[in-house]
Amino acid sequence: GAGVSQSPSNKVTEKGKDVELRCDPISGHTALYWYRQSLGQGLEFLIYFQGNSAPDKSGLPSDRFSAERTGGSVSTLTIQRTQQEDSAVYLCASSLEKSRLAGFFGPGTRLTVL
Amino acid sequence: AQRVTQPEKLLSVFKGAPVELKCNYSYSGSPELFWYVQYSRQRLQLLLRHISRESIKGFTADLNKGETSFHLKKPFAQEEDSAMYYCALSPSGTYKYIFGTGTRLKVLA
Image (cartoon, rainbow over all chains, first blue to last red; front, side, top):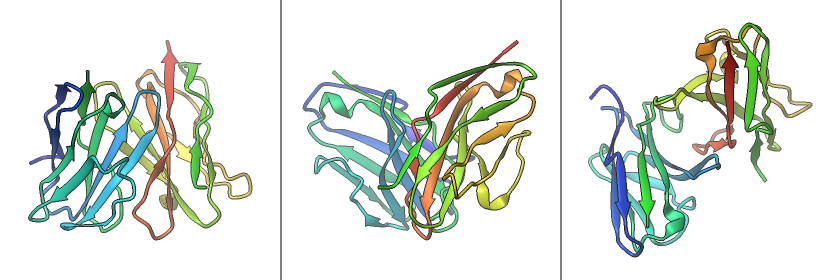
């Protein structure tokens, strides 16, 4: 594709339900980032993938959050037993170079937990 | 602790006036600093990075290690500059990027 894509664009869920957010990076980009943007907050780093490996998962807010990447391409961020404080815009970005966050962000997924 | 501070949530200037978006950082090593911009209904995108010492869309930013600042400047603001601007820091040699809370720039006609 022409750019990073994310799906769904909007997700409304009930507290306690599980959600999956998907990111399709630019083809060939080995680095992939997940960030979260809550209302009035800056971008909060969640996790970084180099290939299929995530060298550091310490940014994930709790053990309800997990992420995986398969085939060095698509990544899925899963939030289990969602809470209202999980409501935010979840952004994905990909980069060609290892460890370099360039300007290739996805449009984000707006998650609303009722 | 590593931190990026953007003290202004909103900055309003008139078209043609100079603009300066403030960014201060807290980091003991040699950081890499960036400015990102998000125009209305568009994706977040990289505006410039300090190592390139570039000018993009008339914007420049100079790293001042003494003042730990990386302010974004433009001598003559244009209406199309209205957007949300984020300053970000990446500790040298890492993949982590620490973002500020952003400043919304409004350029008034």
